[in-house]
Length: 124
Image 1 (cartoon, helix red, strand yellow):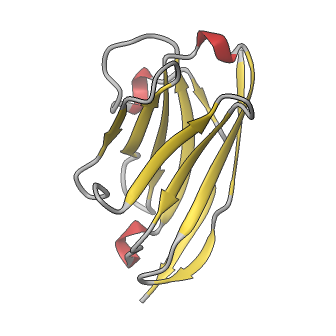
Image 2: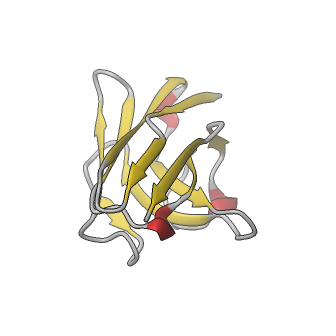
Protein backbone atom coordinates (compact mmCIF):
# COMPACT_ATOMS: atom_id res chain seq x y z
CA UNK A 1 0.00 0.00 0.00
CA UNK A 2 1.04 3.59 -0.70
CA UNK A 3 -0.52 6.52 1.11
CA UNK A 4 -0.59 9.92 -0.58
CA UNK A 5 -1.35 13.31 0.95
CA UNK A 6 -1.58 16.47 -1.16
CA UNK A 7 -1.16 20.03 0.05
CA UNK A 8 -0.57 23.49 -1.35
CA UNK A 9 -3.83 24.30 -3.07
CA UNK A 10 -5.58 27.62 -2.69
CA UNK A 11 -6.95 30.71 -4.38
CA UNK A 12 -4.72 32.68 -6.75
CA UNK A 13 -5.22 35.33 -9.38
CA UNK A 14 -4.69 34.61 -13.05
CA UNK A 15 -1.00 34.79 -13.91
CA UNK A 16 0.01 33.71 -10.42
CA UNK A 17 1.77 30.61 -9.16
CA UNK A 18 1.19 27.77 -6.74
CA UNK A 19 3.22 24.73 -5.74
CA UNK A 20 1.43 21.53 -4.87
CA UNK A 21 3.10 18.86 -2.77
CA UNK A 22 2.33 15.15 -2.50
CA UNK A 23 3.84 13.25 0.40
CA UNK A 24 4.10 9.51 -0.10
CA UNK A 25 4.43 6.83 2.57
CA UNK A 26 4.28 3.04 2.70
CA UNK A 27 5.64 0.86 -0.10
CA UNK A 28 6.94 3.71 -2.23
CA UNK A 29 9.72 1.49 -3.64
CA UNK A 30 7.03 -0.32 -5.65
CA UNK A 31 6.03 2.88 -7.45
CA UNK A 32 6.88 3.34 -11.14
CA UNK A 33 5.02 6.57 -11.95
CA UNK A 34 3.78 9.42 -9.83
CA UNK A 35 1.15 11.50 -11.52
CA UNK A 36 -0.95 14.62 -11.07
CA UNK A 37 -4.51 14.71 -12.35
CA UNK A 38 -7.26 17.28 -12.03
CA UNK A 39 -11.01 17.32 -12.11
CA UNK A 40 -13.18 20.38 -12.65
CA UNK A 41 -16.91 20.38 -11.78
CA UNK A 42 -18.91 18.44 -14.35
CA UNK A 43 -15.81 17.19 -16.15
CA UNK A 44 -13.87 13.96 -16.20
CA UNK A 45 -10.60 13.57 -14.36
CA UNK A 46 -7.76 14.51 -16.68
CA UNK A 47 -4.03 13.96 -16.81
CA UNK A 48 -1.78 16.88 -15.91
CA UNK A 49 1.77 15.55 -15.45
CA UNK A 50 3.71 12.43 -14.48
CA UNK A 51 7.22 11.51 -13.43
CA UNK A 52 9.03 8.20 -13.13
CA UNK A 53 9.90 7.54 -9.51
CA UNK A 54 13.36 6.09 -10.21
CA UNK A 55 14.56 8.57 -12.77
CA UNK A 56 13.46 12.06 -13.71
CA UNK A 57 11.56 11.33 -16.90
CA UNK A 58 8.61 13.68 -17.06
CA UNK A 59 5.42 13.90 -19.10
CA UNK A 60 2.93 16.75 -19.47
CA UNK A 61 -0.48 17.41 -20.89
CA UNK A 62 -0.34 19.86 -23.78
CA UNK A 63 -2.51 22.30 -21.85
CA UNK A 64 0.11 22.76 -19.12
CA UNK A 65 3.36 22.24 -21.02
CA UNK A 66 5.71 25.17 -20.45
CA UNK A 67 3.74 26.39 -17.42
CA UNK A 68 3.80 23.45 -14.99
CA UNK A 69 6.80 21.48 -13.73
CA UNK A 70 6.68 18.13 -11.93
CA UNK A 71 9.59 17.03 -9.76
CA UNK A 72 10.33 14.60 -6.94
CA UNK A 73 12.51 14.56 -3.85
CA UNK A 74 13.71 11.07 -2.90
CA UNK A 75 14.84 12.06 0.56
CA UNK A 76 11.42 13.48 1.43
CA UNK A 77 9.34 10.95 -0.54
CA UNK A 78 7.56 13.93 -2.04
CA UNK A 79 6.42 14.91 -5.51
CA UNK A 80 5.81 18.53 -6.43
CA UNK A 81 3.82 20.32 -9.08
CA UNK A 82 5.00 23.86 -9.66
CA UNK A 83 2.27 25.76 -11.47
CA UNK A 84 3.08 29.10 -13.09
CA UNK A 85 1.11 31.46 -15.31
CA UNK A 86 -2.11 30.03 -13.95
CA UNK A 87 -5.32 30.51 -15.89
CA UNK A 88 -8.97 30.36 -14.77
CA UNK A 89 -9.34 27.13 -16.75
CA UNK A 90 -6.77 25.52 -14.42
CA UNK A 91 -9.37 25.67 -11.64
CA UNK A 92 -10.01 22.13 -10.40
CA UNK A 93 -9.39 19.66 -7.63
CA UNK A 94 -5.87 18.33 -8.13
CA UNK A 95 -5.07 14.74 -7.24
CA UNK A 96 -1.78 12.97 -6.74
CA UNK A 97 -1.60 9.33 -7.82
CA UNK A 98 0.85 6.43 -7.85
CA UNK A 99 1.14 3.64 -10.41
CA UNK A 100 3.08 0.45 -9.78
CA UNK A 101 3.71 -0.73 -13.34
CA UNK A 102 5.31 0.83 -16.43
CA UNK A 103 3.34 1.50 -19.57
CA UNK A 104 0.75 4.23 -19.90
CA UNK A 105 1.09 7.21 -17.63
CA UNK A 106 -1.89 9.39 -18.54
CA UNK A 107 -4.94 7.20 -17.93
CA UNK A 108 -6.46 7.64 -14.47
CA UNK A 109 -7.85 4.11 -14.42
CA UNK A 110 -4.33 2.66 -14.55
CA UNK A 111 -3.24 4.28 -11.29
CA UNK A 112 -3.28 2.23 -8.11
CA UNK A 113 -3.29 4.79 -5.31
CA UNK A 114 -4.81 8.25 -4.95
CA UNK A 115 -4.64 11.14 -2.56
CA UNK A 116 -7.67 13.01 -1.27
CA UNK A 117 -7.20 15.99 -3.58
CA UNK A 118 -6.53 19.68 -3.07
CA UNK A 119 -8.58 22.56 -4.49
CA UNK A 120 -6.96 25.07 -6.84
CA UNK A 121 -9.01 28.11 -7.77
CA UNK A 122 -7.74 30.70 -10.25
CA UNK A 123 -9.66 33.95 -10.39
CA UNK A 124 -9.77 36.15 -13.49
